[in-house]
Length: 440
Image 1 (cartoon, helix red, strand yellow):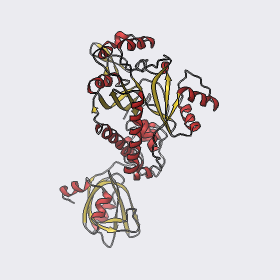
Image 2 (tube, one colour):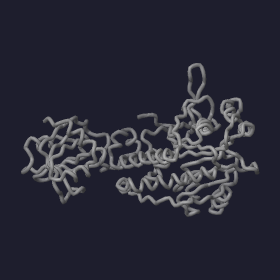
Image 3 (spheres, one colour):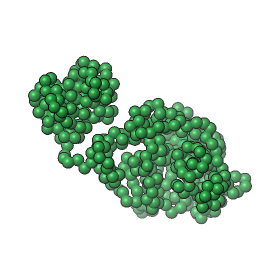
Image 4 (cartoon, one colour):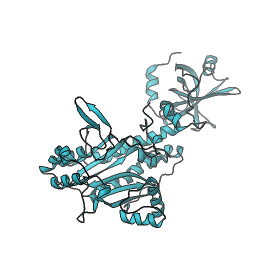
């Protein structure tokens, strides 16, 4: 059967529930995937899903053309169809309305059996979900997670664009380590050796000392051989850098963004949060500041085996949150040796102007005031066992009028994981890349 494609396309781009509410007792055309189909006595039910939700199509024998009933009887999950019909009130449909069909067009039929059930009727192993990611995206749970992630991204861009920050595009192919260490993926770049960027750090600093306030969203890569539920080898970072700012000013900007971001999710994604069984609490400002050594002492008192100079394990981050009774807080005044070479040291030479944010037991963001003095920068590079000559272009950038500056980065997937209440970061990552997974 042929249905006017102009009408189909127009309706496909609207929200199902609101569109149907506006069209009560009128004729509509809906296009989407078959979420479920079943026959109960003298009536057939078709649940039709598009990017915005699920609508119920009810086909009673007494009101539905015989050829339409016959076609519905041939449908399977994930077939793509268009349905023309009339919107009527319903006491049993979740939306309080349904569509009585007069025409149906099968656009394409799905293969059977399905590798997984997007309805979530059966529990599916995470590996299976990731192997068939495009089908998993069609589940209500996954759609909720990634709709929230999309809002996080738009909230980040809106927040900083609205404050006059410029979006920049740093490279991901680089000539030397961004932060030191051996956690680099190397590649052959014509006749030279190159690496995938661990961080946009050096480039966003060079932009900030010229454009003053910048932000970026980009992938970064770390060759860590971890197989933990909080780690990936490719992640997306949301970064900012600003001149004429100290670590304190950068922290103020970070906590303001986090509060705004969470509020945006609370106000715009209520249905998605409900679908995920997630009660998202607002971020109340100012966030608590906990000094690194205070955190160490608190963990020791709580029975943890840790000493000054150690970094926190993921278990200890969670334990620290429990001991403090805080869902989100800063850890400040870090030892110089635990932070990157570009972190501005304090006058005592032992601590630096660095901070982390721990959110619901997991570090989601970190930042520092940066070193803007070339000689000090070269000294710190050497202290970290790095050759300043390998960073010559970076150091030279601060010889020609570089103001003091600070910045931070947030891991998009970690923030999504915590906001949506997922147990594994792979659930909050569209196409995860870890030690064992390179496809799809």
